[in-house]
Length: 361
Image 1 (tube, helix red, strand yellow):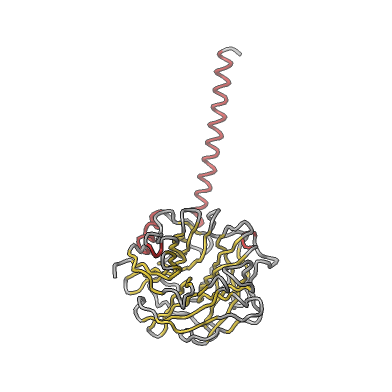
Image 2 (cartoon, helix red, strand yellow):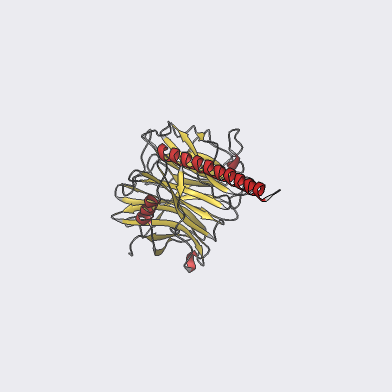
């Protein structure tokens, strides 16, 4: 090949490469324009604004310690008749999850009231009954009340028939009460479980176990149904991701979409809680093992389906002796201008429920 032929070949290769690059850039630009046109994207400025609104840099400390020597976990906060209530679960390695209720007048000091769900010793949920309050007002800074549907106050719960700490498989049930301010056994739906990892329509990421769920009441029926559930499911490899389901009656649920809505590829993404801040939906959730230890973070959506994950500073992370192992599993509210961030703290005091706030109190 002479020099002219070499130069011509080099020039042709350059043109081909540049053309390919230009074509790829055009495709990317078109895809970006389509994403902008569909209205689901969340700008970095909006993400930053949400972070500034919800961040809780001040750790108040432990608010619910071990119950009778048992570990406590998974707070769910709501309000009724001017008082605050917390459902939480207690666990032992020997047996399993049960659910209890506490009461407070100031969100700081909590009084134990009694059980909500206890062991039954038979059935699909004999030794696991971890319940989570449903249909709580999602408006950020709102009344934080549980909203009744068909004159019932609803819970979803994970259940299982094996003893121990979260033994697979765990399935999902639904239960209710006439008065969420009173302890006593919740009424369990007789056709539970409502969802199970063995279901024919169980998706690839939830075929081993179903975990904590959060159900919101979307009165706009954005997805065609009035109730939307978020929950983390585990696949056989052990990775946990957050998926969706929808319902019109709280009893019959349809899985929504083929894939998870929050996926960090490894470790755990779990325990979602969804609120609405202005026009944006915000999902608080915890991460573990795709970064060091366990921590709380969030994602933002316009349509309840497409979520933009926050990649900035954690909302809470291990820093103190009492949460040095894990600081995770959020329940967050805003009341009287202060953000209260309840979470499960694991450290030198065992597994407890702790609080962080947006202002020092």
